[in-house]
Structures are given as C-alpha cells and as structure tokens.
Image 1 (cartoon, rainbow, N blue to C red):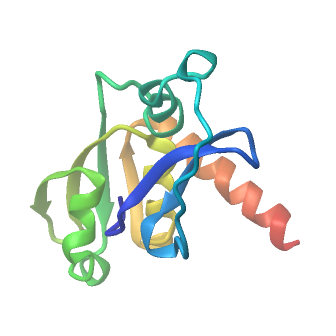
Image 2 (tube, helix red, strand yellow):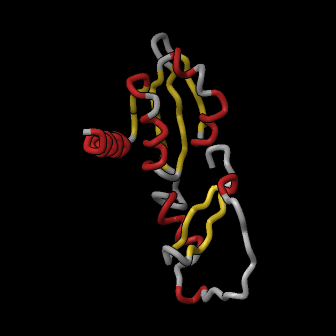
Length: 139
C-alpha cells in the first residue's frame, strides 16, 4: 500500500488489529504466547472494515485534474486503482476503481484545488468532512 509493505497483526498493547509499516519495525521477537483466533474478528473482516467500502464492489471514481498536476502523478495513480484517462483542453479526466472512498479522499486532498470530483457524490461529502476536521485541528 502506497509503495510500502505492511504487516497486519494483533497488537497486545492496544488489544486490536493494527497496521504496521514493515520499514518502521525496529525489532521482531518470537514468543511462546498463543493467540486465540476464535475470540477475535478474522483478518479478512478487519481488512474489509478498515479499508473497503464493499469488498466485492469497488467504487467507480471520476476526477478532473489540471494538466500541470496530472503530469506529476506518475506511478502513484496506479496505487489508487487508475483505470483510464481522457485528455481534455483544460484538464485530464481520470477514472479509478477503488475499494475505500475514505482512503482515496485522503490522497485526493493532497491535490488541493487542482482536482475536481465528478463522481461519486459520496466522495465529495467525505472530502468536505476531512476539510472540516483539518480546519478544527489547525484552528
């Protein structure tokens, strides 16, 4: 995910699954402590809950991105389910298929005013919520 390897594992400290970036793990130790899977949600249930709106149906997303920013997206657009692009006079219209609107919104927010959401409307709502959250954080 995002050019990094991740390890999803049970965190005894937080008593929940956690997403650990592999390049940030400083040490790893095998122990004799057991893990009772029957008392936890499955790893697949965790991934579905955290990273997907619907695991069987990714969301179709269409955005318009200004030419000056679109040319710098490079490989990263493929991490977000890039499918197709159509070059227009004032922008590049890009189609994506992605499982998490929340996660896609975080990436799209980095493009600021250089990106416009065509569809879905739910993505617009999520972006607005994230902007309000950021305003509150930096106020």
